[in-house]
Image 1 (cartoon, rainbow, N blue to C red):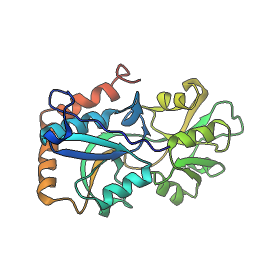
Image 2 (image 1 turned 30 degrees about the vertical axis):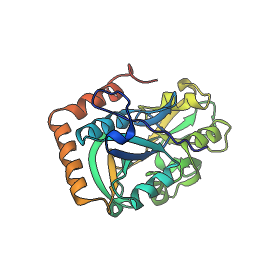
Image 3 (image 1 turned 180 degrees about the vertical axis):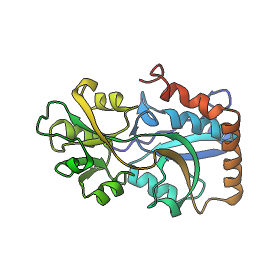
Length: 249
């Protein structure tokens, strides 16, 4: 199911008519805790908070559309001035986007069900014996291909978790910062899963815009983001999500 959601963010966080302020259109996926996810009919997360502040400094309203990840990547690649989050900067994507960030960092580990005594992973070589469930177009896919690890892709991480739960895939990749919330979505407890080995890749996450975006617009975006780094706003917005669990659902 594809969700089409939006939120309008003003300096005082109030909602008002879309036509009163220019729109900063953003595209993202629905399950990427704690960076972007849908809860109570709203797009939430660390990256959403940062994108909202960025839009405010650009004197724009943030309008976020939730799409399957492959479609979100394609939309931001083809359409100018569209913000994409949250994105790992891998070589396969480098030439297609203007990169803003890093916004935050994210580790990615392979998880197994504790009840699966037949799944024993102590190294990446061990993982070659099993089937990984991953999201189509995920940044980890090139790493798996280089390592010779078998992958079964699905449109979303929610679909992957359902397959993982019933044993159709043996392992799934996810960020330890969001695993508890993620597995809860498909009816598992945090104590039912166990992380095994880390997937090797750059852990930085970024915002991205199409190469066809306006040079003047990109100059303003970079300037606003740099100011957020200098005045520690980026750190302030990130800490509740990465530093403790008080704001997590």
